[in-house]
Length: 165
Image 1: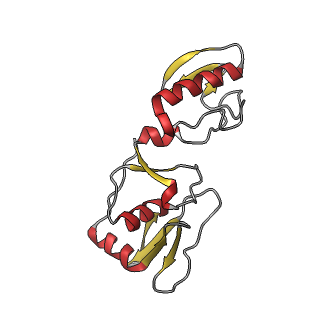
Image 2 (image 1 turned 180 degrees about the horizontal axis):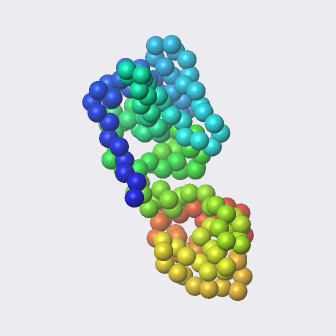
C-alpha cells in the first residue's frame, strides 16, 4: 500500500516562502516571480518542483494546497472529489484512506465490459468481495453500485455516475 510522505520543516518553510495558493481557484503562484505555476499535462497531477544542489524535489499540488490552506500537513491521503486531479480548489479536496481514495477512481478497461467499473464477465466484485454472478452487465453494475455505497459511502464512484445505466 502507498504511504504519504511527510515533509521536513525545511521543506515546509520553503513552500511557505515561495508558493502562494488561491484556494477558490486552486491555482499556485511563485511568490518571487509572481507567475502562475505551470499546470502540466492534461489529466496529470499538478507538481511543484524545487532544486537544491542540482537535485529536484517534487511536491504534489493537492498536498501543497492542503498544507498552505490549513497550515499543517495531513497524514492521510487526499481525494479530488470531482476526480479531476488538476482541480486543486480547497473545496474539491478531502482527507481519506487509501481504500476510500481508490473507491473514487474512474473505471479502466477491465475484461470484456469496457467502461463498467469492477464488473468482469457479469461477475460483480467490490473490495475483493464477489457480490454475485449476473445474466446482464447492467444488473452486475447495479449490484456493484449498491455494495460500493455500503462499503465506501460518499467516496463510491458508481457505474450509474459513469453513465453505464
